[in-house]
Length: 196
Image 1: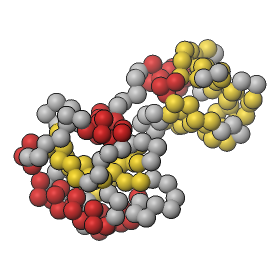
Image 2 (image 1 turned 60 degrees about the vertical axis):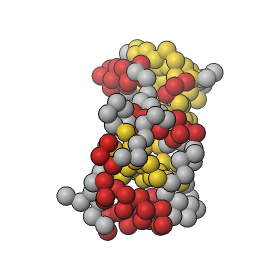
Image 3 (image 1 turned 90 degrees about the vertical axis):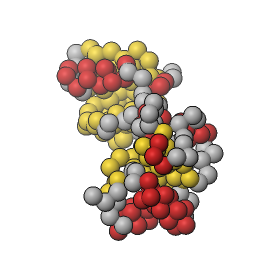
């Protein structure tokens, strides 16, 4: 989703200029005040005089966004955040071929009942990538199936085979990255489409 604004913020008695980022799972403040508010924990969003106010945990937050943006953000906060299953594009008639260790609880929940062993029934390939060999196996399966590939891999600094290595190899093979999303605290995902 990726909405952002540079604005004045108040969190309790603290005030300062921040970059506010409204993401699919979190509202993040960077700058003079640094906070991350899980969207699922945000309560009572209201707009008053061009400011969006809400409560999260024991903190009251106010963002001076202007009337139109404050109302747009309020409407987003009132909607439930999409599930990982929805972000991956899984659902009725949209199951996945799966390869690799997918035992992360959030990923396992998203995949529950949404997998198939039949290539012609799959809308995509979902692969847990821990290294080059996993990527080779997943890429071969996605090429054979002629389907997009969701690569699930560790995030953060110091991972042995992360976003940079994955993107470099996929782009060299002619695949293009078209979407990404968080999977869990430890994992992230990027969707790649096959060469035209």
